[in-house]
Structure formats: structure tokens, C-alpha cells
Image (spheres, rainbow, N blue to C red):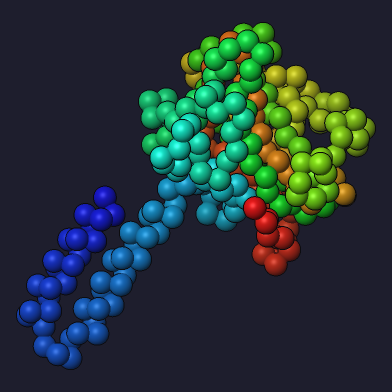
Length: 243
């Protein structure tokens, strides 16, 4: 669509140039620059769904609109998939935009899991929000499966025991369960449901790994994922992630 738009702009520009006086050239050029900027902005916004414009989504491609091409497995851009054959790009059951992620474990003992690491600020409060659609539920079903880390590498994960001690069990279930006080997601079938919780970043944590697990026998669709720092701050407070 973007190429077609650019092609049309070029044709219109040539026609304008042919009928414009020399002094009108700069005005026409600015019109063309504006048109190209509009198409670039539209493309940049495709990865994250359109929410409150004041909210900054810390996740890359939180809307799950962009998927890697020419890869052996379906992989959303910016995310890491474990047991890749359990993750599929989906265009039929979608909360917003054109795509969602279908998570379905295809064999016993295998878990469909997707996650993404982001930088966070100690003692700040983050909001975790996403939408999920349960098509099939069995046994353990599905839940969040998140980590806090003191540094970027996996070996710096803060232990489950330490996190549960810091939060208490009910709050701990926000990052390793179905929400406050819930071991797994509420699972009304065939309807979009919203996960929307806030949690404090531990004082020793500099990174957060947002993740979702779907266990064998369960099929869920995930879309419109957000992690937002809701603590008052300036943009210079956010530390960049080194991928």
C-alpha cells in the first residue's frame, strides 16, 4: 500500500511540476514531503495498537502486527518464541489491527511461550495490559510468566521465592498467574478478555521480561499487549535496552 501511495505521489508531482512556475517549486516539494511523512507515520504505528496517545508502550510491536518474514517459524518482530511451532500468526481472530498471536501447544509436555525483555526503573509502577481469547482450555490452561532481572541476561533473574516474599502471593500472581489472586487466566470461551494490572518494580530490578505461557491442550489468541511505566517521570529516566 505504501509503494502504491508513493507511486501516485510521484505521478502527481510530475504533473504539478509541468504546470508550475519556477517560483512555485519549493511549495510543491513541501507538499510531497508531507505526503511521504504521512505514509511513514502510518507504517510506524502498525506495530502497536492505537491507545491513549499519552501512554508509552515499552514493548516493541505490542500490537503483534509485524512478523518476521522468511523464517522457519512464525515469529512476531521484537519477541522471543520458545518451542516455535506452538506459535502462529493469526488474521481471523483479532482484537485490534490485522494480526494476533495464536498460542497452542501441539504435544504433551510442550508449552507455547512468548516473551520480550524491556528496561524498567526500580521502584516505579508498571501497568501490564493485554487482551486474550480462549478457544480451548485444558488443565493448567494459560497464565502470565514474567521475570524481573537485576541485569539483562537470564542468569540475573530474581528468584520466584524472592519475588513472592516481596509481593505476597496474591500480587505475585500478576506476573506468574492469571492476575491478582488468580493462579491462571479466567477462561470464558470464545470471547475477548482483558488482563489489566499494575505492579511495583522491585528495588533491585532493572529489566522486566513480559511473557505468556499456554499449556498443552489449551488454545489462546493474544493481542494488543502493553507495558507502561505509570510513575511520573521524564523521558531521560528510561534506560535503553541492549539487545
